[in-house]
Image (cartoon, rainbow, N blue to C red; front, top):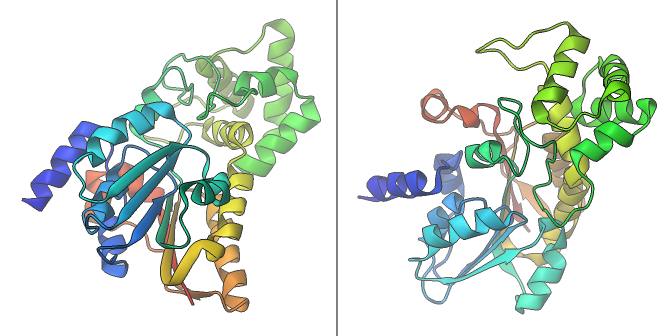
Length: 306
Protein backbone atom coordinates (compact mmCIF):
# COMPACT_ATOMS: atom_id res chain seq x y z
CA UNK A 1 0.00 0.00 0.00
CA UNK A 2 2.84 2.38 0.85
CA UNK A 3 4.40 1.81 -2.56
CA UNK A 4 1.07 2.57 -4.22
CA UNK A 5 0.76 5.76 -2.19
CA UNK A 6 4.29 6.79 -3.13
CA UNK A 7 3.57 6.18 -6.80
CA UNK A 8 0.36 8.19 -6.59
CA UNK A 9 2.23 11.08 -4.95
CA UNK A 10 4.90 10.99 -7.64
CA UNK A 11 2.31 11.06 -10.43
CA UNK A 12 0.52 13.96 -8.78
CA UNK A 13 3.69 15.96 -8.31
CA UNK A 14 5.25 15.07 -11.65
CA UNK A 15 8.48 14.45 -9.80
CA UNK A 16 10.16 11.38 -8.33
CA UNK A 17 12.39 12.12 -5.31
CA UNK A 18 15.88 10.63 -5.63
CA UNK A 19 17.84 8.31 -3.34
CA UNK A 20 14.89 7.68 -1.03
CA UNK A 21 16.00 4.17 -0.01
CA UNK A 22 19.44 5.14 1.32
CA UNK A 23 17.95 8.18 3.02
CA UNK A 24 15.46 5.98 4.87
CA UNK A 25 18.18 3.49 5.76
CA UNK A 26 20.26 6.15 7.46
CA UNK A 27 17.64 8.46 8.92
CA UNK A 28 14.67 7.73 11.16
CA UNK A 29 12.88 10.64 12.84
CA UNK A 30 11.17 10.62 16.24
CA UNK A 31 7.43 11.16 16.03
CA UNK A 32 7.85 14.54 17.74
CA UNK A 33 10.78 15.50 15.49
CA UNK A 34 11.26 18.64 13.44
CA UNK A 35 12.39 18.37 9.83
CA UNK A 36 13.53 21.15 7.53
CA UNK A 37 13.16 20.39 3.84
CA UNK A 38 15.37 23.18 2.57
CA UNK A 39 14.43 22.47 -1.05
CA UNK A 40 10.77 21.56 -0.92
CA UNK A 41 10.30 21.08 -4.65
CA UNK A 42 7.08 19.17 -5.21
CA UNK A 43 7.13 17.65 -1.74
CA UNK A 44 8.37 14.13 -2.46
CA UNK A 45 11.03 13.97 0.25
CA UNK A 46 8.83 15.94 2.67
CA UNK A 47 6.04 13.41 2.23
CA UNK A 48 8.46 10.53 2.76
CA UNK A 49 9.79 11.78 6.09
CA UNK A 50 6.65 13.62 7.14
CA UNK A 51 4.96 10.21 7.44
CA UNK A 52 7.37 9.42 10.29
CA UNK A 53 6.13 12.42 12.26
CA UNK A 54 3.07 12.47 14.51
CA UNK A 55 0.79 15.37 15.49
CA UNK A 56 3.51 16.66 17.81
CA UNK A 57 6.07 16.72 14.99
CA UNK A 58 6.73 19.53 12.53
CA UNK A 59 7.74 19.86 8.90
CA UNK A 60 9.13 23.14 7.63
CA UNK A 61 9.50 23.36 3.85
CA UNK A 62 11.38 26.10 2.00
CA UNK A 63 11.40 26.90 -1.70
CA UNK A 64 11.85 30.01 -3.82
CA UNK A 65 9.51 28.79 -6.58
CA UNK A 66 5.90 29.67 -5.77
CA UNK A 67 4.59 27.10 -8.26
CA UNK A 68 6.54 24.34 -6.49
CA UNK A 69 5.10 25.36 -3.13
CA UNK A 70 1.57 25.20 -4.54
CA UNK A 71 2.19 21.73 -6.00
CA UNK A 72 3.76 20.47 -2.78
CA UNK A 73 0.88 21.76 -0.68
CA UNK A 74 -1.47 19.10 -2.03
CA UNK A 75 1.15 16.36 -1.64
CA UNK A 76 1.80 17.00 2.07
CA UNK A 77 -1.73 18.07 3.00
CA UNK A 78 -2.66 14.77 4.66
CA UNK A 79 0.38 14.52 6.94
CA UNK A 80 -0.40 14.28 10.65
CA UNK A 81 2.36 16.67 11.68
CA UNK A 82 2.30 20.45 11.62
CA UNK A 83 3.28 21.65 8.13
CA UNK A 84 4.65 25.10 7.35
CA UNK A 85 5.66 25.98 3.79
CA UNK A 86 7.63 29.17 3.24
CA UNK A 87 8.66 30.92 0.05
CA UNK A 88 12.25 31.58 0.98
CA UNK A 89 15.77 30.67 -0.13
CA UNK A 90 17.46 28.20 2.19
CA UNK A 91 20.30 30.67 2.65
CA UNK A 92 17.85 32.46 4.99
CA UNK A 93 17.39 29.37 7.19
CA UNK A 94 18.61 31.31 10.22
CA UNK A 95 15.95 33.99 9.78
CA UNK A 96 13.13 31.57 8.96
CA UNK A 97 13.73 29.33 12.00
CA UNK A 98 13.86 32.32 14.33
CA UNK A 99 10.65 33.67 12.80
CA UNK A 100 8.93 30.31 13.29
CA UNK A 101 10.06 30.13 16.92
CA UNK A 102 11.98 26.90 16.33
CA UNK A 103 14.92 26.24 18.64
CA UNK A 104 16.57 23.11 17.21
CA UNK A 105 15.73 20.59 14.48
CA UNK A 106 16.25 16.85 13.98
CA UNK A 107 16.90 16.83 10.25
CA UNK A 108 17.90 19.23 7.50
CA UNK A 109 17.57 17.93 3.94
CA UNK A 110 18.62 19.73 0.76
CA UNK A 111 18.05 18.21 -2.70
CA UNK A 112 19.88 20.62 -4.98
CA UNK A 113 18.39 19.37 -8.23
CA UNK A 114 15.35 20.67 -10.07
CA UNK A 115 12.53 18.68 -11.58
CA UNK A 116 11.17 17.98 -15.05
CA UNK A 117 8.21 20.29 -14.49
CA UNK A 118 10.62 23.19 -13.95
CA UNK A 119 12.54 22.28 -17.10
CA UNK A 120 9.30 22.36 -19.06
CA UNK A 121 8.14 25.64 -17.52
CA UNK A 122 8.58 28.30 -20.20
CA UNK A 123 8.48 31.05 -17.56
CA UNK A 124 11.68 29.72 -15.99
CA UNK A 125 13.60 29.37 -19.24
CA UNK A 126 15.88 26.53 -18.14
CA UNK A 127 15.68 24.23 -21.16
CA UNK A 128 17.24 24.36 -24.60
CA UNK A 129 14.91 21.67 -25.96
CA UNK A 130 12.40 24.28 -27.13
CA UNK A 131 12.36 28.10 -27.40
CA UNK A 132 11.89 29.78 -24.02
CA UNK A 133 12.67 33.27 -22.76
CA UNK A 134 16.28 33.25 -21.52
CA UNK A 135 15.40 33.81 -17.87
CA UNK A 136 16.59 31.03 -15.49
CA UNK A 137 15.40 32.76 -12.30
CA UNK A 138 13.98 30.11 -9.99
CA UNK A 139 12.98 32.99 -7.74
CA UNK A 140 11.14 35.61 -9.76
CA UNK A 141 11.94 38.20 -7.09
CA UNK A 142 15.51 38.26 -8.40
CA UNK A 143 16.15 41.08 -10.85
CA UNK A 144 18.92 39.77 -13.11
CA UNK A 145 18.08 37.19 -15.79
CA UNK A 146 20.31 34.96 -17.87
CA UNK A 147 19.56 37.22 -20.86
CA UNK A 148 20.96 40.15 -18.88
CA UNK A 149 24.23 38.30 -18.31
CA UNK A 150 24.48 37.02 -21.88
CA UNK A 151 23.81 40.40 -23.46
CA UNK A 152 25.50 42.79 -21.02
CA UNK A 153 28.59 41.14 -19.49
CA UNK A 154 31.93 41.89 -21.08
CA UNK A 155 33.53 39.05 -23.00
CA UNK A 156 36.09 38.30 -20.29
CA UNK A 157 33.48 38.40 -17.51
CA UNK A 158 31.19 36.11 -19.48
CA UNK A 159 34.03 33.65 -20.12
CA UNK A 160 34.86 33.68 -16.40
CA UNK A 161 31.25 32.84 -15.48
CA UNK A 162 31.12 29.94 -17.96
CA UNK A 163 34.46 28.59 -16.76
CA UNK A 164 33.89 29.07 -13.01
CA UNK A 165 30.36 27.69 -12.84
CA UNK A 166 30.27 25.45 -15.91
CA UNK A 167 33.87 24.20 -15.83
CA UNK A 168 33.96 24.44 -19.62
CA UNK A 169 37.49 24.72 -20.98
CA UNK A 170 36.14 26.32 -24.14
CA UNK A 171 34.63 29.20 -22.14
CA UNK A 172 36.64 31.91 -23.94
CA UNK A 173 35.61 30.68 -27.36
CA UNK A 174 31.97 30.37 -26.29
CA UNK A 175 32.02 33.89 -24.85
CA UNK A 176 33.55 35.28 -28.04
CA UNK A 177 30.85 33.68 -30.20
CA UNK A 178 28.14 35.00 -27.87
CA UNK A 179 29.51 38.55 -28.02
CA UNK A 180 29.78 38.38 -31.81
CA UNK A 181 26.18 37.13 -32.09
CA UNK A 182 24.70 39.71 -29.73
CA UNK A 183 26.47 42.42 -31.72
CA UNK A 184 24.16 41.52 -34.59
CA UNK A 185 21.04 40.69 -32.56
CA UNK A 186 20.30 40.28 -28.88
CA UNK A 187 20.11 36.67 -27.65
CA UNK A 188 16.72 36.39 -25.97
CA UNK A 189 15.69 32.71 -26.09
CA UNK A 190 17.20 29.48 -24.79
CA UNK A 191 17.39 27.93 -28.25
CA UNK A 192 19.18 30.98 -29.68
CA UNK A 193 21.85 30.67 -26.99
CA UNK A 194 22.14 26.90 -27.45
CA UNK A 195 22.64 27.38 -31.19
CA UNK A 196 25.46 29.86 -30.60
CA UNK A 197 27.21 27.50 -28.16
CA UNK A 198 26.90 24.56 -30.56
CA UNK A 199 28.40 26.71 -33.29
CA UNK A 200 31.27 27.79 -31.04
CA UNK A 201 32.08 24.21 -30.09
CA UNK A 202 31.47 22.87 -33.61
CA UNK A 203 29.26 20.23 -32.00
CA UNK A 204 25.67 19.84 -33.20
CA UNK A 205 23.11 18.53 -30.73
CA UNK A 206 22.60 14.79 -31.08
CA UNK A 207 19.85 12.68 -29.44
CA UNK A 208 21.10 10.56 -26.57
CA UNK A 209 24.21 12.65 -25.97
CA UNK A 210 24.92 15.42 -23.51
CA UNK A 211 23.96 18.68 -25.21
CA UNK A 212 26.99 20.89 -26.00
CA UNK A 213 25.31 23.85 -24.25
CA UNK A 214 24.74 21.99 -20.97
CA UNK A 215 27.75 23.49 -19.16
CA UNK A 216 26.99 27.02 -20.33
CA UNK A 217 23.38 26.73 -19.19
CA UNK A 218 24.49 25.34 -15.84
CA UNK A 219 26.91 28.24 -15.38
CA UNK A 220 24.31 30.88 -16.16
CA UNK A 221 21.70 29.26 -13.92
CA UNK A 222 24.14 29.12 -11.00
CA UNK A 223 25.16 32.75 -11.54
CA UNK A 224 21.59 34.03 -11.88
CA UNK A 225 20.38 32.23 -8.74
CA UNK A 226 23.58 32.66 -6.66
CA UNK A 227 23.36 28.92 -6.03
CA UNK A 228 26.82 28.23 -4.63
CA UNK A 229 26.81 31.24 -2.30
CA UNK A 230 23.40 30.20 -0.99
CA UNK A 231 24.55 26.62 -0.46
CA UNK A 232 27.63 27.76 1.44
CA UNK A 233 25.49 29.88 3.76
CA UNK A 234 23.20 26.92 4.46
CA UNK A 235 26.16 24.64 5.21
CA UNK A 236 27.73 27.25 7.50
CA UNK A 237 24.63 27.79 9.63
CA UNK A 238 23.31 24.21 9.76
CA UNK A 239 25.29 22.99 12.83
CA UNK A 240 23.86 25.81 14.91
CA UNK A 241 20.31 24.52 14.38
CA UNK A 242 20.77 20.74 14.56
CA UNK A 243 20.03 18.93 17.79
CA UNK A 244 22.76 16.61 19.11
CA UNK A 245 22.24 13.45 17.07
CA UNK A 246 20.41 15.39 14.37
CA UNK A 247 21.13 14.78 10.69
CA UNK A 248 21.98 16.86 7.67
CA UNK A 249 21.70 15.28 4.22
CA UNK A 250 22.57 17.01 0.96
CA UNK A 251 21.95 15.65 -2.54
CA UNK A 252 24.08 17.38 -5.16
CA UNK A 253 24.10 17.00 -8.93
CA UNK A 254 27.43 18.39 -10.08
CA UNK A 255 30.99 18.57 -8.81
CA UNK A 256 30.88 22.22 -7.71
CA UNK A 257 28.04 21.52 -5.26
CA UNK A 258 29.47 18.22 -4.07
CA UNK A 259 32.87 19.80 -3.40
CA UNK A 260 31.29 22.47 -1.19
CA UNK A 261 29.36 19.85 0.79
CA UNK A 262 32.38 17.57 1.19
CA UNK A 263 34.64 20.39 2.36
CA UNK A 264 32.02 21.80 4.73
CA UNK A 265 31.38 18.41 6.34
CA UNK A 266 35.13 17.87 6.76
CA UNK A 267 35.59 21.29 8.34
CA UNK A 268 32.73 20.71 10.78
CA UNK A 269 34.21 17.30 11.59
CA UNK A 270 37.54 18.99 12.40
CA UNK A 271 35.62 21.41 14.62
CA UNK A 272 34.07 18.37 16.39
CA UNK A 273 30.59 19.36 15.30
CA UNK A 274 29.86 16.53 12.83
CA UNK A 275 30.31 12.84 12.44
CA UNK A 276 30.43 12.10 8.71
CA UNK A 277 28.28 9.03 8.02
CA UNK A 278 29.06 8.72 4.30
CA UNK A 279 32.81 8.44 3.69
CA UNK A 280 32.02 8.49 -0.02
CA UNK A 281 28.87 9.95 -1.56
CA UNK A 282 26.00 7.54 -2.03
CA UNK A 283 24.84 7.22 -5.63
CA UNK A 284 21.79 5.65 -7.24
CA UNK A 285 21.71 1.97 -8.07
CA UNK A 286 20.92 0.73 -11.56
CA UNK A 287 17.27 0.02 -10.77
CA UNK A 288 16.63 3.58 -9.61
CA UNK A 289 18.46 5.06 -12.60
CA UNK A 290 16.26 2.99 -14.95
CA UNK A 291 13.12 4.24 -13.20
CA UNK A 292 14.34 7.80 -12.80
CA UNK A 293 17.21 8.86 -15.13
CA UNK A 294 17.51 12.12 -13.17
CA UNK A 295 19.09 10.14 -10.32
CA UNK A 296 22.11 9.21 -12.45
CA UNK A 297 24.17 12.21 -11.37
CA UNK A 298 22.84 12.47 -7.80
CA UNK A 299 25.32 12.26 -4.91
CA UNK A 300 24.16 12.02 -1.31
CA UNK A 301 26.29 12.96 1.71
CA UNK A 302 25.04 12.64 5.30
CA UNK A 303 26.46 13.91 8.58
CA UNK A 304 25.26 13.70 12.19
CA UNK A 305 25.55 16.47 14.76
CA UNK A 306 27.72 15.58 17.74
